[in-house]
Length: 84
Image 1 (tube, rainbow, N blue to C red):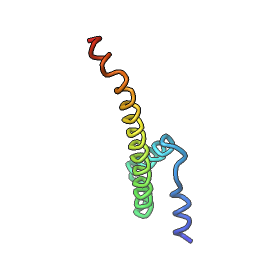
Image 2 (image 1 turned 90 degrees about the horizontal axis):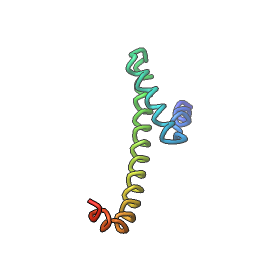
Image 3 (image 1 turned 120 degrees about the horizontal axis):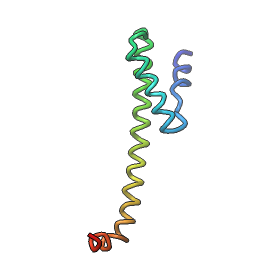
Image 4 (image 1 turned 135 degrees about the vertical axis):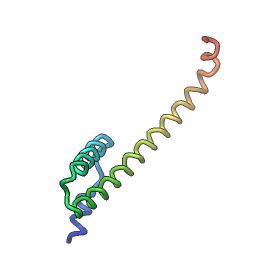
């Protein structure tokens, strides 16, 4: 039963911003130094999950930007150099 409740807590965040905000709260709580060992380990695990989620979202966004830039650079490469 304990494992299933941990999985419920470890649900996917609604968004990058929500994950980032939750991660900030975890870091603040851990830095305060008032958590038990078990709570610290649980918070660390959740923080690692959130960090991975955020990294994946950022990686996806970077890939989208690269694709958009690649399409735009094909259209505007020649005109950029002429204006300088």
